[in-house]
Amino acid sequence: MTSIDEHIRKDQIEIETAKAVGNEAKVRHLEDELKSLEEYKSHHPEDDRDPNALEVYCDLNPEAPECRVYDD
Image 1 (cartoon, one colour):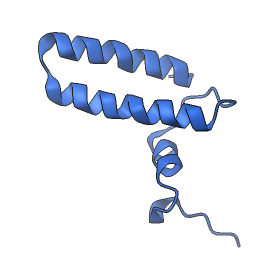
Image 2: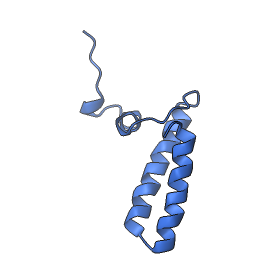
Image 3: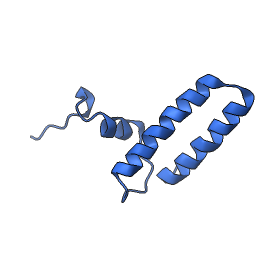
Image 4: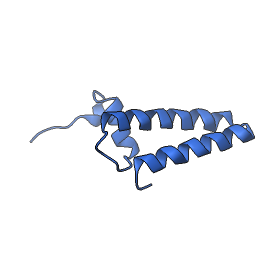
């Protein structure tokens, strides 16, 4: 994906497709991903690029050990 809006639209389409075939596990996974992306977008309205999974995770969980940043 090149933009977060494109990624959100793709997830919405995939959710509808998964619902149509009855794949509830995929629906739950995609709905969680979509919720995280929308929350990331609300925290970074000026940033249009598609964030990677770690960026989204750290935005939602800044206290997590893998998200700590140390200054030298």
